[in-house]
Length: 601
Image (tube, helix red, strand yellow):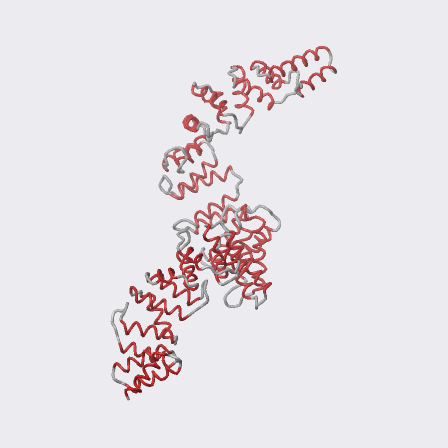
Protein backbone atom coordinates (compact mmCIF):
# COMPACT_ATOMS: atom_id res chain seq x y z
CA UNK A 1 0.00 0.00 0.00
CA UNK A 2 1.37 3.40 -0.96
CA UNK A 3 2.20 5.93 1.72
CA UNK A 4 -0.68 8.36 2.36
CA UNK A 5 1.62 11.30 1.61
CA UNK A 6 2.40 9.82 -1.78
CA UNK A 7 -1.28 9.33 -2.59
CA UNK A 8 -2.07 12.93 -1.64
CA UNK A 9 0.80 14.19 -3.75
CA UNK A 10 -0.47 12.26 -6.80
CA UNK A 11 -4.01 13.51 -6.27
CA UNK A 12 -2.70 17.07 -6.12
CA UNK A 13 -0.74 16.55 -9.33
CA UNK A 14 -3.94 15.80 -11.29
CA UNK A 15 -5.31 19.24 -10.44
CA UNK A 16 -2.16 21.28 -11.23
CA UNK A 17 -0.87 22.96 -14.41
CA UNK A 18 1.76 21.06 -16.39
CA UNK A 19 4.85 22.77 -14.84
CA UNK A 20 3.38 22.33 -11.36
CA UNK A 21 2.56 18.70 -12.13
CA UNK A 22 6.21 18.11 -12.93
CA UNK A 23 7.24 19.58 -9.57
CA UNK A 24 4.61 17.52 -7.70
CA UNK A 25 5.84 14.40 -9.48
CA UNK A 26 9.37 15.25 -8.39
CA UNK A 27 8.24 15.68 -4.75
CA UNK A 28 6.37 12.38 -4.89
CA UNK A 29 9.48 10.61 -6.15
CA UNK A 30 11.61 12.25 -3.47
CA UNK A 31 9.09 11.17 -0.84
CA UNK A 32 9.25 7.55 -1.96
CA UNK A 33 13.06 7.53 -2.05
CA UNK A 34 13.35 9.29 1.29
CA UNK A 35 11.01 6.83 2.95
CA UNK A 36 13.08 4.01 1.46
CA UNK A 37 16.15 5.42 3.27
CA UNK A 38 17.92 7.38 0.50
CA UNK A 39 20.00 10.00 2.35
CA UNK A 40 20.27 12.41 -0.61
CA UNK A 41 16.50 12.22 -1.16
CA UNK A 42 15.95 12.88 2.53
CA UNK A 43 18.16 15.97 2.30
CA UNK A 44 16.42 17.25 -0.87
CA UNK A 45 12.98 16.65 0.66
CA UNK A 46 14.02 18.52 3.80
CA UNK A 47 15.25 21.41 1.65
CA UNK A 48 11.93 21.49 -0.22
CA UNK A 49 9.98 21.80 3.05
CA UNK A 50 12.41 24.45 4.32
CA UNK A 51 12.13 26.64 1.18
CA UNK A 52 8.55 25.81 0.22
CA UNK A 53 9.58 24.56 -3.20
CA UNK A 54 6.78 22.31 -4.46
CA UNK A 55 5.26 21.94 -1.00
CA UNK A 56 4.07 24.19 1.80
CA UNK A 57 6.78 25.45 4.14
CA UNK A 58 7.08 23.36 7.31
CA UNK A 59 10.28 23.87 9.26
CA UNK A 60 9.53 20.96 11.64
CA UNK A 61 9.13 18.61 8.66
CA UNK A 62 12.28 19.99 7.05
CA UNK A 63 14.16 19.36 10.28
CA UNK A 64 12.78 15.82 10.41
CA UNK A 65 14.19 14.91 6.98
CA UNK A 66 17.48 16.76 7.54
CA UNK A 67 17.98 14.77 10.75
CA UNK A 68 17.30 11.50 8.90
CA UNK A 69 19.90 12.42 6.27
CA UNK A 70 22.41 13.78 8.78
CA UNK A 71 22.41 10.52 10.71
CA UNK A 72 23.44 8.86 7.41
CA UNK A 73 26.44 11.26 7.22
CA UNK A 74 24.97 13.54 4.58
CA UNK A 75 27.23 16.61 4.97
CA UNK A 76 24.81 19.07 3.40
CA UNK A 77 22.03 17.97 5.77
CA UNK A 78 24.37 18.33 8.74
CA UNK A 79 25.23 21.89 7.66
CA UNK A 80 21.57 22.85 7.27
CA UNK A 81 20.72 21.34 10.68
CA UNK A 82 23.39 23.43 12.42
CA UNK A 83 21.89 26.60 10.94
CA UNK A 84 18.32 25.60 11.84
CA UNK A 85 19.21 24.66 15.40
CA UNK A 86 21.25 27.84 15.84
CA UNK A 87 18.90 30.40 14.30
CA UNK A 88 15.37 28.97 14.47
CA UNK A 89 15.14 27.23 17.85
CA UNK A 90 15.71 28.18 21.47
CA UNK A 91 15.11 25.02 23.41
CA UNK A 92 15.02 21.62 21.73
CA UNK A 93 15.84 17.99 22.43
CA UNK A 94 17.63 15.88 19.82
CA UNK A 95 18.90 12.35 19.35
CA UNK A 96 22.17 11.67 21.20
CA UNK A 97 23.81 10.61 17.90
CA UNK A 98 23.02 14.01 16.36
CA UNK A 99 24.30 15.70 19.48
CA UNK A 100 27.54 13.77 19.08
CA UNK A 101 27.88 15.08 15.51
CA UNK A 102 27.51 18.63 16.78
CA UNK A 103 30.00 17.98 19.56
CA UNK A 104 32.57 16.74 17.05
CA UNK A 105 32.06 19.83 14.92
CA UNK A 106 32.26 22.09 17.97
CA UNK A 107 35.59 20.49 18.92
CA UNK A 108 36.86 21.82 15.59
CA UNK A 109 35.73 25.33 16.58
CA UNK A 110 32.71 25.26 14.24
CA UNK A 111 30.87 28.39 15.41
CA UNK A 112 27.44 27.30 14.20
CA UNK A 113 27.81 23.90 15.88
CA UNK A 114 28.69 25.65 19.15
CA UNK A 115 25.69 27.95 18.69
CA UNK A 116 23.44 24.95 17.99
CA UNK A 117 24.60 23.16 21.11
CA UNK A 118 23.65 26.22 23.18
CA UNK A 119 20.06 25.85 21.96
CA UNK A 120 19.74 22.16 22.75
CA UNK A 121 18.59 20.40 25.91
CA UNK A 122 21.56 18.05 26.34
CA UNK A 123 20.70 14.38 26.73
CA UNK A 124 23.09 13.85 29.63
CA UNK A 125 21.11 11.00 31.16
CA UNK A 126 21.27 8.61 28.23
CA UNK A 127 21.31 5.23 30.02
CA UNK A 128 22.93 3.55 27.04
CA UNK A 129 26.08 5.65 27.08
CA UNK A 130 26.52 7.46 30.38
CA UNK A 131 30.28 7.81 30.10
CA UNK A 132 30.19 9.53 26.70
CA UNK A 133 27.28 11.80 27.60
CA UNK A 134 29.06 12.87 30.79
CA UNK A 135 32.18 13.62 28.74
CA UNK A 136 30.13 15.75 26.37
CA UNK A 137 28.60 17.57 29.34
CA UNK A 138 32.04 18.51 30.65
CA UNK A 139 33.27 19.62 27.22
CA UNK A 140 30.13 21.67 26.66
CA UNK A 141 30.52 23.35 30.04
CA UNK A 142 34.16 24.16 29.32
CA UNK A 143 33.14 25.68 25.98
CA UNK A 144 30.91 28.04 27.94
CA UNK A 145 27.42 26.56 27.48
CA UNK A 146 25.48 27.95 30.50
CA UNK A 147 22.97 25.08 30.49
CA UNK A 148 25.82 22.58 30.71
CA UNK A 149 27.62 24.63 33.36
CA UNK A 150 24.48 24.72 35.48
CA UNK A 151 23.92 20.97 35.06
CA UNK A 152 27.56 20.17 35.87
CA UNK A 153 27.29 22.31 39.02
CA UNK A 154 24.19 20.38 40.08
CA UNK A 155 26.00 17.10 39.60
CA UNK A 156 28.96 18.18 41.72
CA UNK A 157 26.48 19.27 44.41
CA UNK A 158 24.86 15.85 44.69
CA UNK A 159 26.08 12.36 45.48
CA UNK A 160 25.66 9.93 42.61
CA UNK A 161 25.77 12.53 39.84
CA UNK A 162 28.55 10.74 37.98
CA UNK A 163 31.21 13.21 39.14
CA UNK A 164 32.97 13.82 42.46
CA UNK A 165 30.87 15.42 45.18
CA UNK A 166 32.59 18.79 45.43
CA UNK A 167 30.81 21.86 46.80
CA UNK A 168 33.45 24.30 45.61
CA UNK A 169 33.38 22.84 42.10
CA UNK A 170 29.58 23.08 42.08
CA UNK A 171 29.75 26.77 42.99
CA UNK A 172 32.40 27.35 40.31
CA UNK A 173 30.10 26.11 37.55
CA UNK A 174 26.96 27.75 38.92
CA UNK A 175 28.81 31.06 39.03
CA UNK A 176 30.01 30.64 35.43
CA UNK A 177 26.42 29.97 34.30
CA UNK A 178 24.95 32.76 36.43
CA UNK A 179 27.36 35.30 34.96
CA UNK A 180 25.94 34.40 31.54
CA UNK A 181 22.40 35.08 32.73
CA UNK A 182 21.24 31.57 33.65
CA UNK A 183 18.53 32.47 36.18
CA UNK A 184 18.37 29.13 37.98
CA UNK A 185 22.15 29.27 38.44
CA UNK A 186 21.73 32.76 39.90
CA UNK A 187 19.34 31.38 42.50
CA UNK A 188 21.77 28.55 43.27
CA UNK A 189 24.45 31.16 43.92
CA UNK A 190 22.08 32.95 46.30
CA UNK A 191 21.48 29.67 48.12
CA UNK A 192 25.23 28.93 48.24
CA UNK A 193 26.09 32.30 49.76
CA UNK A 194 23.17 32.01 52.17
CA UNK A 195 24.16 28.58 53.48
CA UNK A 196 27.92 28.78 53.03
CA UNK A 197 27.76 25.90 50.55
CA UNK A 198 31.18 25.59 48.92
CA UNK A 199 31.90 29.23 49.62
CA UNK A 200 32.09 31.55 52.64
CA UNK A 201 28.65 32.78 53.76
CA UNK A 202 27.96 36.29 52.56
CA UNK A 203 24.53 37.84 53.06
CA UNK A 204 25.13 40.71 50.64
CA UNK A 205 26.21 38.34 47.88
CA UNK A 206 23.22 36.09 48.59
CA UNK A 207 20.90 39.09 48.22
CA UNK A 208 22.69 40.18 45.04
CA UNK A 209 22.18 36.86 43.31
CA UNK A 210 18.61 36.53 44.53
CA UNK A 211 17.92 39.96 43.03
CA UNK A 212 19.46 38.79 39.74
CA UNK A 213 17.17 35.79 39.83
CA UNK A 214 13.99 37.78 40.52
CA UNK A 215 14.91 40.38 37.89
CA UNK A 216 14.48 37.74 35.20
CA UNK A 217 12.06 35.23 36.76
CA UNK A 218 8.30 35.33 37.24
CA UNK A 219 8.42 32.55 39.87
CA UNK A 220 6.86 34.44 42.79
CA UNK A 221 6.75 31.26 44.90
CA UNK A 222 10.53 31.53 45.11
CA UNK A 223 10.04 34.36 47.64
CA UNK A 224 8.20 31.91 49.89
CA UNK A 225 10.77 29.16 49.32
CA UNK A 226 13.75 31.38 50.16
CA UNK A 227 11.98 32.57 53.30
CA UNK A 228 11.31 28.96 54.34
CA UNK A 229 15.00 28.14 53.84
CA UNK A 230 15.97 30.96 56.23
CA UNK A 231 13.32 29.99 58.80
CA UNK A 232 14.19 26.29 58.79
CA UNK A 233 17.99 26.65 58.89
CA UNK A 234 19.94 25.04 61.72
CA UNK A 235 20.09 28.54 63.22
CA UNK A 236 16.82 30.09 61.98
CA UNK A 237 16.97 33.66 60.71
CA UNK A 238 13.36 34.79 61.01
CA UNK A 239 14.22 38.40 60.16
CA UNK A 240 15.56 37.41 56.73
CA UNK A 241 12.65 35.02 56.25
CA UNK A 242 10.25 37.84 57.02
CA UNK A 243 12.04 40.14 54.57
CA UNK A 244 11.58 37.76 51.64
CA UNK A 245 8.02 36.86 52.61
CA UNK A 246 7.15 40.55 52.74
CA UNK A 247 8.67 41.01 49.28
CA UNK A 248 6.56 38.16 47.95
CA UNK A 249 3.39 39.30 49.72
CA UNK A 250 3.69 42.79 48.19
CA UNK A 251 3.56 41.13 44.77
CA UNK A 252 0.51 39.12 45.71
CA UNK A 253 2.18 35.79 46.40
CA UNK A 254 -0.29 33.92 48.61
CA UNK A 255 2.29 31.50 49.96
CA UNK A 256 4.37 34.40 51.27
CA UNK A 257 1.28 35.92 52.87
CA UNK A 258 0.55 32.61 54.59
CA UNK A 259 4.07 32.40 56.02
CA UNK A 260 3.78 35.93 57.39
CA UNK A 261 0.64 34.76 59.22
CA UNK A 262 2.64 31.80 60.49
CA UNK A 263 5.20 34.24 61.90
CA UNK A 264 2.44 36.19 63.64
CA UNK A 265 0.85 33.03 65.04
CA UNK A 266 4.06 31.72 66.61
CA UNK A 267 5.54 35.11 67.44
CA UNK A 268 8.73 34.32 65.55
CA UNK A 269 9.05 37.97 64.53
CA UNK A 270 9.28 39.13 68.14
CA UNK A 271 5.65 39.09 69.26
CA UNK A 272 2.54 36.98 68.81
CA UNK A 273 -0.24 38.74 66.94
CA UNK A 274 -3.13 36.28 66.78
CA UNK A 275 -5.56 38.88 65.44
CA UNK A 276 -3.42 39.61 62.38
CA UNK A 277 -2.63 35.90 61.98
CA UNK A 278 -6.33 35.00 61.99
CA UNK A 279 -7.13 37.64 59.37
CA UNK A 280 -4.32 36.52 57.08
CA UNK A 281 -5.14 32.82 57.47
CA UNK A 282 -8.77 33.65 56.65
CA UNK A 283 -7.69 35.61 53.55
CA UNK A 284 -5.50 32.67 52.52
CA UNK A 285 -8.37 30.23 52.88
CA UNK A 286 -10.63 32.53 50.85
CA UNK A 287 -8.00 32.59 48.10
CA UNK A 288 -7.89 28.79 48.20
CA UNK A 289 -11.60 28.60 47.43
CA UNK A 290 -11.04 30.45 44.14
CA UNK A 291 -7.62 29.16 43.07
CA UNK A 292 -6.58 25.56 42.44
CA UNK A 293 -2.79 25.98 42.58
CA UNK A 294 -1.50 24.98 46.02
CA UNK A 295 1.73 23.03 45.65
CA UNK A 296 2.95 24.06 49.12
CA UNK A 297 -0.06 22.96 51.17
CA UNK A 298 -0.86 26.44 52.43
CA UNK A 299 -4.61 25.97 51.98
CA UNK A 300 -5.11 23.05 54.42
CA UNK A 301 -2.49 24.60 56.72
CA UNK A 302 -4.44 27.88 56.86
CA UNK A 303 -7.61 25.99 57.82
CA UNK A 304 -5.64 24.01 60.39
CA UNK A 305 -4.33 27.15 62.10
CA UNK A 306 -7.80 28.70 62.10
CA UNK A 307 -8.95 25.57 63.95
CA UNK A 308 -6.16 26.03 66.50
CA UNK A 309 -7.15 29.68 66.95
CA UNK A 310 -10.71 28.54 67.69
CA UNK A 311 -9.49 26.06 70.30
CA UNK A 312 -7.54 27.95 72.98
CA UNK A 313 -7.20 26.29 76.36
CA UNK A 314 -9.32 28.84 78.22
CA UNK A 315 -12.44 29.05 76.02
CA UNK A 316 -12.52 26.56 73.14
CA UNK A 317 -15.07 26.97 70.38
CA UNK A 318 -15.36 23.31 69.41
CA UNK A 319 -17.90 23.86 66.65
CA UNK A 320 -15.66 26.37 64.83
CA UNK A 321 -12.58 24.20 65.37
CA UNK A 322 -14.38 21.19 63.85
CA UNK A 323 -15.52 23.27 60.88
CA UNK A 324 -11.98 24.31 60.01
CA UNK A 325 -10.48 20.88 60.64
CA UNK A 326 -13.06 19.36 58.30
CA UNK A 327 -12.26 22.05 55.74
CA UNK A 328 -8.57 21.19 56.02
CA UNK A 329 -9.32 17.51 55.41
CA UNK A 330 -11.57 18.32 52.48
CA UNK A 331 -8.69 20.19 50.81
CA UNK A 332 -6.16 17.51 51.74
CA UNK A 333 -8.31 14.77 50.23
CA UNK A 334 -8.33 16.61 46.90
CA UNK A 335 -4.68 17.57 46.69
CA UNK A 336 -2.59 15.33 48.97
CA UNK A 337 -0.54 13.81 46.14
CA UNK A 338 0.37 17.25 44.73
CA UNK A 339 2.01 18.82 47.78
CA UNK A 340 5.75 19.49 47.53
CA UNK A 341 6.20 20.18 51.25
CA UNK A 342 4.90 18.59 54.46
CA UNK A 343 1.47 19.80 55.57
CA UNK A 344 -0.60 19.66 58.75
CA UNK A 345 -3.12 17.32 57.08
CA UNK A 346 -2.22 14.39 59.33
CA UNK A 347 -2.47 16.43 62.53
CA UNK A 348 -5.77 17.96 61.40
CA UNK A 349 -7.21 14.45 61.04
CA UNK A 350 -5.71 13.42 64.39
CA UNK A 351 -7.21 16.40 66.23
CA UNK A 352 -10.58 15.88 64.57
CA UNK A 353 -10.49 12.26 65.76
CA UNK A 354 -9.77 13.42 69.33
CA UNK A 355 -12.68 15.89 69.28
CA UNK A 356 -15.05 13.41 67.67
CA UNK A 357 -14.19 10.65 70.13
CA UNK A 358 -14.63 13.02 73.07
CA UNK A 359 -18.16 13.66 71.82
CA UNK A 360 -19.13 10.01 71.35
CA UNK A 361 -21.05 9.48 74.57
CA UNK A 362 -21.34 5.81 73.73
CA UNK A 363 -22.67 6.47 70.22
CA UNK A 364 -21.30 3.80 67.87
CA UNK A 365 -21.83 6.06 64.85
CA UNK A 366 -19.62 8.73 66.39
CA UNK A 367 -17.00 6.16 67.37
CA UNK A 368 -16.95 4.95 63.78
CA UNK A 369 -16.46 8.55 62.60
CA UNK A 370 -13.57 9.00 65.03
CA UNK A 371 -12.01 5.74 63.82
CA UNK A 372 -12.21 7.00 60.24
CA UNK A 373 -10.23 10.10 61.22
CA UNK A 374 -7.66 8.02 63.13
CA UNK A 375 -7.19 5.92 60.02
CA UNK A 376 -6.88 8.95 57.74
CA UNK A 377 -4.28 10.52 60.03
CA UNK A 378 -2.35 7.25 60.22
CA UNK A 379 -2.44 6.86 56.44
CA UNK A 380 -0.87 10.32 56.16
CA UNK A 381 1.92 9.30 58.53
CA UNK A 382 0.77 10.58 61.92
CA UNK A 383 2.52 8.36 64.51
CA UNK A 384 0.11 9.30 67.31
CA UNK A 385 -2.88 8.22 65.24
CA UNK A 386 -1.20 4.94 64.38
CA UNK A 387 -0.54 4.40 68.07
CA UNK A 388 -4.20 5.09 68.92
CA UNK A 389 -5.37 2.57 66.33
CA UNK A 390 -3.02 -0.06 67.72
CA UNK A 391 -4.23 0.57 71.27
CA UNK A 392 -7.82 0.13 70.09
CA UNK A 393 -6.96 -3.00 68.15
CA UNK A 394 -5.14 -4.50 71.14
CA UNK A 395 -8.25 -3.97 73.26
CA UNK A 396 -10.50 -5.76 70.78
CA UNK A 397 -11.51 -3.20 68.13
CA UNK A 398 -11.68 -5.54 65.14
CA UNK A 399 -12.13 -2.75 62.57
CA UNK A 400 -8.97 -0.99 63.71
CA UNK A 401 -7.14 -4.34 63.59
CA UNK A 402 -8.44 -4.99 60.08
CA UNK A 403 -7.18 -1.57 58.96
CA UNK A 404 -3.74 -2.20 60.47
CA UNK A 405 -3.56 -5.55 58.67
CA UNK A 406 -3.85 -3.68 55.35
CA UNK A 407 -0.80 -1.49 56.01
CA UNK A 408 2.57 -2.25 54.46
CA UNK A 409 4.00 -4.23 57.35
CA UNK A 410 5.73 -7.56 57.90
CA UNK A 411 3.93 -10.86 57.48
CA UNK A 412 4.02 -11.60 61.21
CA UNK A 413 2.44 -8.26 62.06
CA UNK A 414 -0.23 -8.63 59.39
CA UNK A 415 -1.06 -12.11 60.67
CA UNK A 416 -1.29 -10.79 64.24
CA UNK A 417 -3.72 -8.00 63.31
CA UNK A 418 -5.86 -10.38 61.27
CA UNK A 419 -6.04 -12.70 64.27
CA UNK A 420 -7.28 -9.86 66.46
CA UNK A 421 -9.71 -8.72 63.77
CA UNK A 422 -11.22 -12.20 63.78
CA UNK A 423 -11.62 -12.02 67.60
CA UNK A 424 -9.23 -14.93 68.06
CA UNK A 425 -6.80 -15.29 70.94
CA UNK A 426 -3.49 -16.74 69.90
CA UNK A 427 -0.66 -16.65 72.44
CA UNK A 428 1.87 -17.97 69.92
CA UNK A 429 1.21 -15.07 67.52
CA UNK A 430 1.56 -12.53 70.31
CA UNK A 431 4.85 -14.20 71.29
CA UNK A 432 6.11 -14.13 67.66
CA UNK A 433 5.39 -10.41 67.48
CA UNK A 434 7.23 -9.84 70.75
CA UNK A 435 10.31 -11.34 69.03
CA UNK A 436 9.90 -9.47 65.73
CA UNK A 437 12.95 -7.27 65.10
CA UNK A 438 11.13 -5.17 62.51
CA UNK A 439 8.95 -3.36 65.04
CA UNK A 440 10.05 -0.92 67.71
CA UNK A 441 10.58 -1.91 71.35
CA UNK A 442 7.54 -0.07 72.71
CA UNK A 443 5.26 -2.19 70.55
CA UNK A 444 7.21 -5.37 71.26
CA UNK A 445 6.62 -4.85 74.99
CA UNK A 446 2.87 -4.65 74.37
CA UNK A 447 2.92 -7.89 72.35
CA UNK A 448 4.93 -9.45 75.19
CA UNK A 449 2.30 -8.33 77.71
CA UNK A 450 -0.41 -9.87 75.53
CA UNK A 451 1.52 -13.13 75.30
CA UNK A 452 1.92 -13.19 79.11
CA UNK A 453 -1.75 -12.44 79.55
CA UNK A 454 -2.60 -15.29 77.19
CA UNK A 455 -0.45 -17.65 79.25
CA UNK A 456 2.56 -18.18 76.98
CA UNK A 457 5.27 -19.78 79.19
CA UNK A 458 8.25 -18.45 77.23
CA UNK A 459 6.94 -14.91 77.43
CA UNK A 460 6.84 -14.87 81.23
CA UNK A 461 10.26 -16.55 81.41
CA UNK A 462 11.87 -13.92 79.14
CA UNK A 463 10.30 -11.00 81.03
CA UNK A 464 11.69 -12.34 84.31
CA UNK A 465 15.23 -12.27 82.87
CA UNK A 466 15.36 -8.58 81.88
CA UNK A 467 14.63 -5.71 84.24
CA UNK A 468 13.79 -3.19 81.45
CA UNK A 469 11.19 -5.53 79.98
CA UNK A 470 9.72 -6.09 83.43
CA UNK A 471 9.60 -2.33 84.03
CA UNK A 472 7.79 -1.67 80.73
CA UNK A 473 5.37 -4.48 81.48
CA UNK A 474 4.59 -2.69 84.73
CA UNK A 475 3.74 0.46 82.78
CA UNK A 476 1.67 -1.42 80.21
CA UNK A 477 -0.45 -3.29 82.76
CA UNK A 478 -0.90 -0.09 84.78
CA UNK A 479 -2.19 1.87 81.78
CA UNK A 480 -4.02 -0.97 80.04
CA UNK A 481 -2.12 -0.59 76.77
CA UNK A 482 -3.05 -3.51 74.55
CA UNK A 483 -4.15 -5.56 77.56
CA UNK A 484 -6.81 -4.99 80.24
CA UNK A 485 -5.56 -2.62 82.94
CA UNK A 486 -4.37 -4.69 85.89
CA UNK A 487 -2.74 -2.76 88.79
CA UNK A 488 -1.77 -6.00 90.57
CA UNK A 489 0.08 -7.23 87.47
CA UNK A 490 1.66 -3.80 87.11
CA UNK A 491 3.01 -3.86 90.67
CA UNK A 492 4.23 -7.43 90.24
CA UNK A 493 6.32 -6.55 87.17
CA UNK A 494 7.66 -3.36 88.75
CA UNK A 495 8.78 -5.47 91.72
CA UNK A 496 10.45 -7.96 89.40
CA UNK A 497 12.31 -5.14 87.64
CA UNK A 498 13.69 -3.94 91.00
CA UNK A 499 14.51 -7.41 92.28
CA UNK A 500 16.40 -8.42 89.12
CA UNK A 501 18.83 -5.52 88.71
CA UNK A 502 17.71 -2.71 90.99
CA UNK A 503 15.78 -0.81 88.32
CA UNK A 504 15.49 2.68 89.82
CA UNK A 505 12.60 3.81 87.64
CA UNK A 506 10.59 0.77 88.68
CA UNK A 507 11.41 1.37 92.35
CA UNK A 508 10.31 5.02 92.17
CA UNK A 509 7.08 4.07 90.44
CA UNK A 510 6.33 1.38 93.01
CA UNK A 511 6.99 3.87 95.83
CA UNK A 512 4.68 6.38 94.19
CA UNK A 513 1.92 3.80 93.82
CA UNK A 514 2.34 2.82 97.50
CA UNK A 515 2.30 6.41 98.69
CA UNK A 516 -0.93 6.97 96.76
CA UNK A 517 -2.58 4.22 98.81
CA UNK A 518 -2.34 1.23 96.48
CA UNK A 519 -2.43 -1.70 98.95
CA UNK A 520 -1.00 -4.12 96.41
CA UNK A 521 1.94 -1.78 95.73
CA UNK A 522 2.46 -1.35 99.49
CA UNK A 523 2.68 -5.13 99.88
CA UNK A 524 5.18 -5.52 97.01
CA UNK A 525 7.30 -2.63 98.29
CA UNK A 526 7.38 -4.29 101.70
CA UNK A 527 8.65 -7.56 100.18
CA UNK A 528 11.56 -5.67 98.60
CA UNK A 529 12.48 -4.03 101.90
CA UNK A 530 12.23 -7.34 103.74
CA UNK A 531 14.32 -9.31 101.22
CA UNK A 532 16.71 -6.49 100.32
CA UNK A 533 16.62 -7.60 96.68
CA UNK A 534 17.52 -4.79 94.25
CA UNK A 535 17.68 -2.05 96.90
CA UNK A 536 20.71 -0.64 98.73
CA UNK A 537 19.65 -1.52 102.30
CA UNK A 538 17.41 -4.22 103.73
CA UNK A 539 14.99 -2.87 106.38
CA UNK A 540 12.58 -4.98 108.41
CA UNK A 541 11.09 -1.81 109.89
CA UNK A 542 10.33 -0.33 106.41
CA UNK A 543 8.84 -3.68 105.44
CA UNK A 544 6.70 -3.69 108.60
CA UNK A 545 5.55 -0.09 107.93
CA UNK A 546 4.31 -0.84 104.43
CA UNK A 547 2.80 -4.22 105.40
CA UNK A 548 0.74 -2.47 108.08
CA UNK A 549 -0.49 0.05 105.50
CA UNK A 550 -1.56 -2.74 103.17
CA UNK A 551 -2.93 -5.01 105.91
CA UNK A 552 -5.15 -2.26 107.21
CA UNK A 553 -6.71 -2.07 103.73
CA UNK A 554 -7.45 -5.80 103.88
CA UNK A 555 -4.61 -7.13 101.72
CA UNK A 556 -4.50 -10.84 102.69
CA UNK A 557 -0.84 -11.42 101.75
CA UNK A 558 0.19 -8.33 103.70
CA UNK A 559 -1.77 -9.50 106.76
CA UNK A 560 -0.10 -12.93 106.68
CA UNK A 561 3.46 -11.58 106.22
CA UNK A 562 2.94 -8.84 108.81
CA UNK A 563 1.95 -11.56 111.29
CA UNK A 564 5.18 -13.40 110.53
CA UNK A 565 7.22 -10.25 111.24
CA UNK A 566 5.40 -9.73 114.55
CA UNK A 567 6.15 -13.35 115.41
CA UNK A 568 9.79 -12.80 114.47
CA UNK A 569 10.15 -9.80 116.81
CA UNK A 570 8.27 -11.56 119.64
CA UNK A 571 4.92 -9.74 119.54
CA UNK A 572 2.68 -12.83 119.60
CA UNK A 573 -0.62 -11.01 120.17
CA UNK A 574 -0.15 -8.82 117.14
CA UNK A 575 0.96 -11.87 115.16
CA UNK A 576 -2.18 -13.75 116.18
CA UNK A 577 -4.37 -10.74 115.35
CA UNK A 578 -3.16 -10.51 111.75
CA UNK A 579 -3.09 -14.27 111.24
CA UNK A 580 -6.73 -14.40 112.31
CA UNK A 581 -7.68 -11.68 109.83
CA UNK A 582 -5.77 -13.38 107.01
CA UNK A 583 -7.31 -16.76 107.80
CA UNK A 584 -10.74 -15.16 107.90
CA UNK A 585 -10.20 -14.10 104.28
CA UNK A 586 -9.20 -17.61 103.25
CA UNK A 587 -5.42 -17.65 103.63
CA UNK A 588 -4.66 -21.36 104.22
CA UNK A 589 -1.16 -20.70 105.55
CA UNK A 590 -2.58 -18.39 108.18
CA UNK A 591 -5.23 -20.97 109.12
CA UNK A 592 -2.55 -23.65 109.51
CA UNK A 593 -0.48 -21.31 111.68
CA UNK A 594 -3.44 -20.66 113.98
CA UNK A 595 -4.22 -24.37 114.26
CA UNK A 596 -0.60 -25.16 115.12
CA UNK A 597 -0.54 -22.52 117.84
CA UNK A 598 -3.83 -23.76 119.31
CA UNK A 599 -2.25 -27.23 119.70
CA UNK A 600 0.78 -25.72 121.42
CA UNK A 601 -1.43 -23.78 123.83
